Length: 259
Image 1 (cartoon, helix red, strand yellow):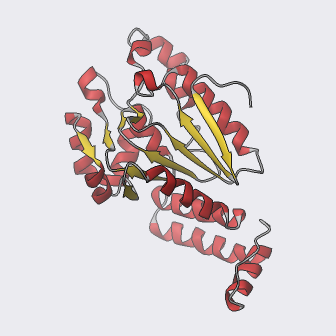
Image 2: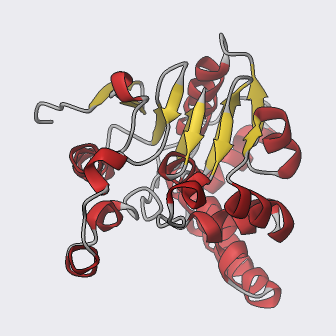
Image 3: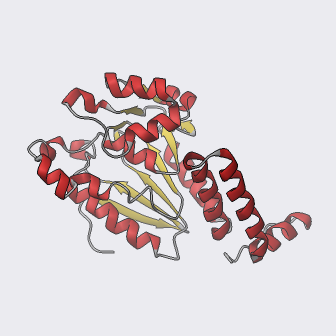
């Protein structure tokens, strides 16, 4: 992996920890950071030693939004032709391996959208989420209006997008935006433990489980159930399914081979 300016990457037994690293601006998302994310996730996608990614920031901010100083003079023509930050915004959403967002402090605008691209969010008790683009004369552009509405419902999404208000960690958990809230001292360890647990399972089965949950947001119920049933049957072609069920019957830990 080439030298990185805006990210830090650590490897821990099948888990990659990707840390946004622009603390002087609360990890605001700039073109350089987004380009590095695309590069790093591309490399991790093909790295057989990595099964799960945890993405985090620091205790003050996951990411406090896009870097407005970089965006303020951008023209409509440039956005049409180049896309700006949105050019890389599907990097996480399209990633094949599970991605957990470990969020402390501010996750606003593009930062909230980046967290929602992950498969689930584990939040510290000081986390704050919001889509405040309306306050600076624009709207969410990384999929925020769409993902937020699917996660928390129209009323709360409309409230946040039209008023720019922030949602605290407790409300985010009640609303379904985050899966768990932990103390600031523990949230990253909890996220890493969850990632390690996922990494211990059969990788093809994990990929199937991720696919069928994602399908629930994209397809009608009958079609989603049909697809789930097909993938469920397909697991019986895997050595890992035979090993997992045999281990359960024999009251021992499974030894998955990822095939």
